[in-house]
Length: 257
Image (cartoon, rainbow, N blue to C red):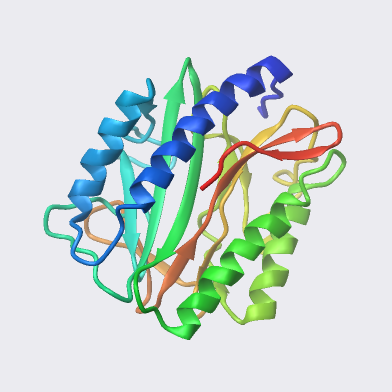
């Protein structure tokens, strides 16, 4: 069932989203060559505690997984699309694409956001990849009006991917969010995976996380041996996400980077 949240509940979600935003911006400022991703993880935990929140991902078992996620932060580098686990052996290098995905809980409500950072001197193609994925997110957000459908969100993302010539990761996408980090509906990035049953109409009170994921190449991905990290097949990947509330007069973005 898709939850419809009251304005007072959306304000509570917004408070969780503010913690997400503050933590992400703090962690993003630390991303530079030579940094160990485990240090980003520890910094995210400490900052979340300082702000009065709870890391949403730490030891969380989402509906799509048989395992609990072992960290508070997802740090996905280059060919890692999503769910990259921070590690004491994973070091950021010049030219890397680093995707940060973070969620927090505050007063019983959740927020979620993600961003991709180009570290130092990145290639022109990867700069274009970042530009395209970010554009796709904002084009999708513009569709979040009462009366529109989830199909319209996916179609807008596809249009941008086609314009720039990048692949879309269709197996993964956005989701409802509120009292739980993952709720219905699944917010697809590709129209081909949307069945008539899945194609919900957007209504005031819906809160969704929209998260386009683009890759160089065709968008094909696989799960690595750690059981979490999703990788593009020898390609670079990019991921942006905002938590968005659908109100009577249109979308309100609850997170920021």
